[in-house]
Figure (tube, rainbow, N blue to C red):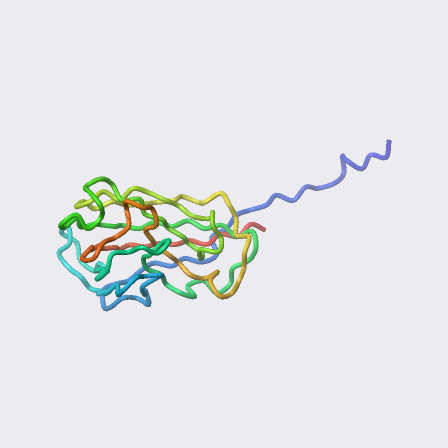
Length: 186
């Protein structure tokens, strides 16, 4: 017996928060843009008095969405993403049903990509209740980053991709309080 097992110290890995993005729509769209949209998605920041709250981002689609997934993105939000990083994402969202603009009155499945769509399935999905404000919160997503393609890895994406939940022409949504946190284990 060599006795090697008793004298070796084990290093504990620690997950630490290294970066946080928090949206601010008080004076504009905060660098958010349309993502994979048929037609045009008009975005307007500083929308007030939505569910008695101010500083929302409003999105209005002008065309029925038929792409795989359409929504909004904020490009290059995180510039130091490494293999193994983990993320969490939360958002407050309000879907306006209007005149059947979201295919019925049921909940609308909303996909949240905290670090680019190339890292699927590093996503969170939740049901946004129509005509009510819903907070979607992923907690720390268990799957770590496995693709660091610089063309998309720092992008945040919020999208609708399920048939029956895709926006139609005239569909309106509001988002605010988007918080994405980046964690690294060392």
